[in-house]
Image (cartoon, rainbow, N blue to C red; front, side):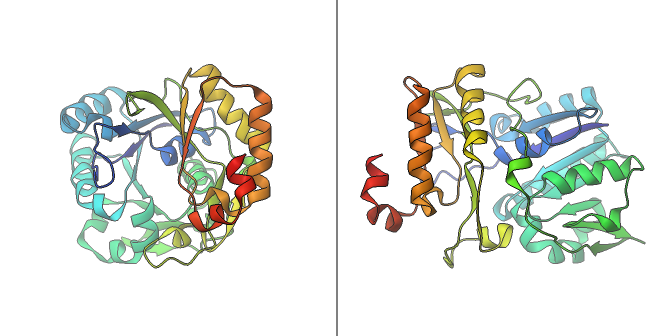
Amino acid sequence: MRIVLLSMPDVAPVIMHESAFHMPSLGIASIGANLDDRHEVYVIDLIRKRRHTRRYLTRTLLKIKPQVVGFSTMTWQYATCLKLIRLVRSLLPDVKIVLGGYHATLMYQEIADGPEAAQIDFMIRGEGEVAFQSLVSALEGDGRLEKINALSHKKNGTFIHNPSGDLLDLSRLKLPIRDGRRLTGGYHIMNHHCEVMETSRGCTRNCNFCSIRHMYGRAFRRFPIERILADIDDIYYRRKVRWIFVSDDNMVMDPDRVIALCDAIIARRYRKLYFVVQADCVTMAQNETMVRK
């Protein structure tokens, strides 16, 4: 099956201007990587085509002719997402449209009750790697839609929302797509080529401005250190990139693990490799040994 996964072109230059950084979408890259090898999958970060989105997407989709197009969107990008869905429908009337990301996770009921529901075939809530693979298999006749956790699908034109199911076992996830299947490039932090990776998912804090607990629950899960090092090797040796943004919601929640990870990275003797990470300053202030490491 031919599949295209899209992230939105909208930017929010509140903290740093878009000319200073553009980072790839890790979410769609991970979902695409965890599809069966028999599928032909492409990921497109429209943030890199935001000035020519319609023209680029028209040309690319008519060339690939995908059978499934997946959209990842946040709430503030949703209006753009709906415009792009209409564009895709006009180009490929028979394509299956799948909506995922934070907006679909938090607002699936509102979407299902709204007029835009007619344009959307499926929604995936929360982590998408396993649910999307199961959906694609079901569309090929291998599996039943009603058995797929975290999937919203239609019956007689009305959305049915399956139970969410358990959080994923992170040790079973493949490395994200960073090869030629990613059709867009030019990612950078302050004029340095960059890539994105994750070492954990979730956060146990209860900040009222954050939606992460709706995506992962109030939980903190760790990728195995061996898998993290394989991810760094892929970026460092295969992609020849020296700046890495760690997208964890709160990397430092387990200080002993951070120290162990730092020791493992130091032992690899990477040269001129830089990491950028967002982290809880309270935990950092209480763990000087971790910060020093």
